[in-house]
Length: 565
Ligand SMILES: [Zn+2]
Image 1 (cartoon, rainbow, N blue to C red):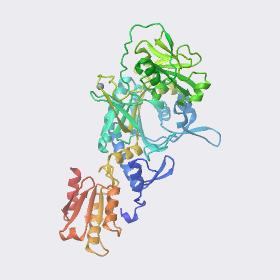
Image 2 (tube, rainbow, N blue to C red):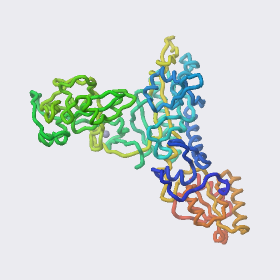
Image 3 (cartoon, rainbow, N blue to C red):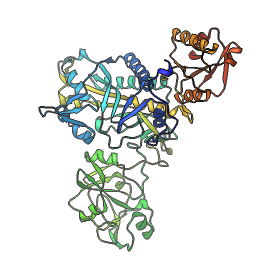
Image 4 (cartoon, helix red, strand yellow):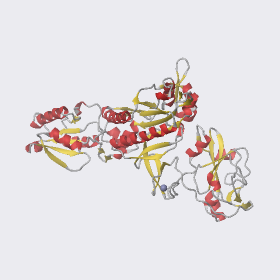
């Protein structure tokens, strides 16, 4: 490709709207263009890189036994209503009506459609197992599209679905997919770690995410320094230390003038915050939820909502709390009526807690669960934090940040049961098909690759993802020998199968080198009167500082050898 003809311009200025390095570089290198919030066009350079990712994924899915097909973006909303996942996705689901007022959804994922498809094509255990996949655009109405390609509303996704006769089959395919995913990230030059994940709106039991560790990542990862435990903070668990406060004593009311927050109450009564219970208030689909948790712990909203299953959950405002008749600053689950009370299981981690008295500036000592109050739900809804103890080995937990580049789920049978996707087993018994699903967002993988591989000058593409492998950069005046040699080299390298970006522009060396660095093509070949005096060309790898001279003769062979190293 001749750079003078390439569609898309490089930009020296850092675009003001770009929040992350990958966003800035994608815009500056002319790889993407924003159409609307979280909606992008790909220009040729960006699209070439994205197609490389797609080819790697396709290859690994095929090797794992996957069969590629394609399903529609437009899906009847009824299918989503049949599984109840229209509610689970909530406002994230794009919906529309056709001219006959029939409701449709733009697919955020394809479990429903593929399960229907399999239902009509699988009858017997002999038709299973099956691995079906597609690479196709998905739509999610993100509340806050951000970070360029990190969180978008229309994106390219590879989604594979596994269908098995039993759990053992699912486990086997799940393990195969975990390995295939590792292969994909390795081939993309992206070290990704596997973490336990919340299964969210997709549903199912086991779920893992693949994370690329980068500071700008939007996900917090909690991991153990002593063992392999790692989980998304949304899901991470830690050990809640037992609080030994002796045998349960009778409840005692104490005045706590001026003390409202847990910190103030603990200080006033001279007890650690871990000896208190605090009340926190949320609005779940318009209804107030009364949440109780040990004073030193924080509520994890994802875990909380896994209990409440609301399509919208947020903290209640002070006004909403007061309006509900709750005594702010001294709210207590003891004696409270008319609310759904959700307690973190830390209410069971000790005795004789301090809690509110539902009276202004008054608290209760020696509150014990379940003697003094009953919760409608008791579950782990606490945030695991760095410094906490590991649930597996007791070691110390730490935190880092990452970008999620893949998510896999053991769905089990809840979708096949709801949609009636059954098969007849060896004994003639009808059973629901056991399912798994496995997604990779390609746009996000591209962004993660740039987040991991760049410097202040631009992108540093891994060879496998680079839109072009060679940046041919002659420094010449028209009609010189440099031009002649460069044209010959261009033809020779293309002939040898290289993807070459030929900077045939009449620009200064400074401009050309800056663009070469910005675009991040792995191998830069410079031809100049100086190199030709030595009958050679200069090779500089984008990932290295030093350049070297290579003899002109047999350059294609030499480059091939370099690439295969
Ligand atoms: Zn551990």
